[in-house]
Every structure is written in C-alpha cells, then in structure tokens.
Length: 288
Image (cartoon, rainbow, N blue to C red; front, side, top):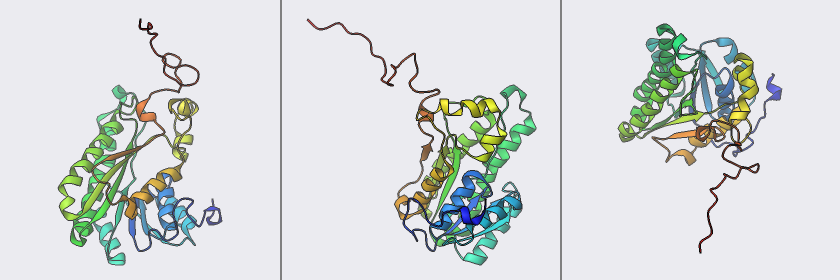
C-alpha cells in the first residue's frame, strides 16, 4: 500500500479537529494502531508511533506522508522500563507536551488453557498489563501531571463473558480495564482522563491471515450485526475521544464489537427467536 492510497481527509470529522495535539500510539505499525495513527494525523495531530519492529512503522510513516498532521516513529518494547522512560523524554524534548496516549500495543495467542505454560502466560501479562502500566505511568508522571491533564485510551478486548482459548489475554485485559477505572478516580485531581476501549473482532491482517482458518470462517457468525469491524471504526472512536467531544469520558469501558459482548452466536438463534429475529414468547391464555 502506498501513500497515494491513503485518504487525505477524514470521512467523519472536520479538517483540523486535532490541530496542535500531540498523541502517542503504541503498536502503530499495523491493524488498529496504524489506522488510528493515520486518522489522528488526518485531523492535524502530531503523532508519535511506536512498536517492536521498525519496518511496519516505516510503512505507516509512508502512508502518513502528505497528510495534514505529522507522523514520526520509534522502535520500542513497552515492557522495558528504561526504554519507555527515554521514549517519553524524547517526545517531550521534541514536542514539549503530550495530550493523548493510545495504549494499543498488545498480543496473545490461541491455546487451550491447560496447554499454556507459565512462560507463555507471563509473556501475555507482561505485554498487556505491565507494558500498558509503564506507558501510562511514564506519560502521567513526565507530562500529564506537570502540565495539568491528558487522556489515556487503552485498547482491551470484547467479549467480557469469557474467551475460551485466550484465558491469559482475558485476564490481562480485565486488569487493564480496572486499571483505567482506578486511575480515572485517583488521577482526576490532575485533570487526567482514562478509558478502556474493548475491541471485538476487526478485519485486521493479523486476524485474517494468522488465526486458524476455522476461526476466520466462522467469525461473523458470532457477531449479531453479521460482520466484523473495520479498523477505521476504532480510529473514529479514538479521534472522537481525543477531541473536545470526549472531555467528559473517564473511568469507563466503551465496547465496540457489533453486539458480540451480549451474545455468543448468530442472530436470530433458532432456539429462542423466529426467522425475523423476534424472540419467541410464551403462549398466554386469554383473560376471561
């Protein structure tokens, strides 16, 4: 994909909506992180993307070339405390402030719970929980608290009713959601707002090419609205929350999953609804 294939303007928001804002997006080299970074740049923000590999970040930079804002990137392992600290020091040295941190980086692997090793479980927790904490803590202590405010948006997962095959990731993302709830209260005195964004199934390259084919083939049958999400839909949510329209959101989890959180199968289900999707009702005797 080349830069010429990237829309220069947002399909939803007015031009210049985020002019002057400085945003950090982790995991900006692919999927939801890449599209989020590009949407913020379209709206005029200065975006600093980070990730574990420089090549995908460079591809995002190519796509961002010529857009209204700016995109710079840096290789970073968010699990490394010293590296995270130096990363934010550099951001502040170059931009003097930070307005929004998007904790998008994360990872997991499909596995029966009994087959997950202690090392495998620890790896997922370190990336999703420890990494999110290090990024959030550094952004707060180095920028948000001294400047009197900022926003932290942490991407988690839906559904919340249990995810067989991903017990490690489910545990990690639940921890992050509680982290955001707690910090929203504790750091409100500093003007910091924190939210979790629980993402359902999105048509990212990782999902469509690296997950087992049986999962891909049956994906949309598990979503009530009948389709997976598009990466730009998550990007629009982040842009909305980064804008002044998002200033009263804090301490909550916003689920974006096409209704998947409320149901575990296709709609209508034959057992409890008719062909139109109307739930079946008990036949009642007419009153005398």
